[in-house]
Length: 317
Image (tube, rainbow, N blue to C red; front, side, top):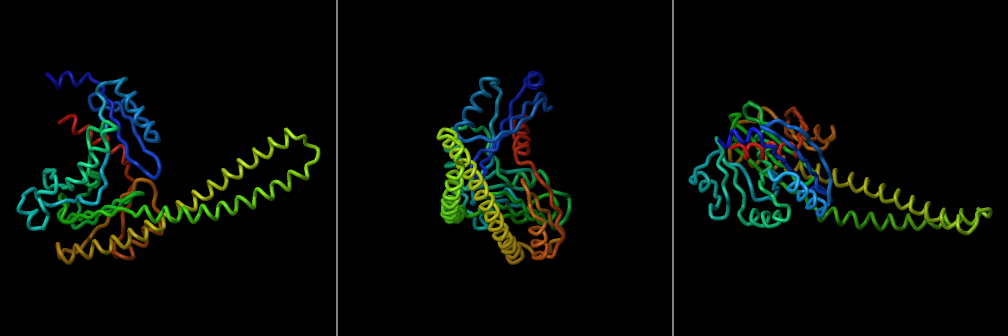
């Protein structure tokens, strides 16, 4: 009977994740699994809260989902407690999600804190980013999977094409970015002062303008200069952060592969896949290929769509 009723019900799926300084959001309306509409937004915290509330008012069948990218999580090629104990993982400190062929675990402390934080958004489902790789894995043996985002990187190695033998996650260091921002802001302020001094000299030479027009022009040009300075500073900051994250990622990949060979398996890797959600440079891909001595197949993944796909599976269970 429920399945019959569900056939006629519209469901609103909201997926989101935090990136840099805003929440990336997707609203999807589905009916019997078919997508009726789909929109994407960028919100601050208050805007996201208000948006979710408005969706609930519009449709009570609203489900909110996100991902958790904390460090203390991973994959194990079994669901048995004995396997976890053999790997030295304390069962008292984790929560285990048992899947068909393997399991995902996450630290209880991190999960509980994240759940408390997500209450303000009325989150129904919290997914591990490892599931994003699982949904897009290929049926190839001895394969290295890498997922690169602005805030973290994940590695999963599948030996048999359907369940992982090794996993690792790395979170990029945000505090170093803040230090760079402070240094850049000092240079920006010095440059801004020089520009304003030049601007005042130019305005003084325009004798035909009356006081009102002169004040208006002064304000307008000064605001334009400030906007240009802010934009240039932001672009420089993004470039520096991207390079830093790429360098850390390459080191992380090297160490993970070394750990895999030394402690998990002696089967050589044959395939390599690099997933990303925004953009990657050709130089970054080439640098990884030179380190791992494997050709890489790169593929862009839509995080928001994957989260909503996962939520729809949970709803229809």
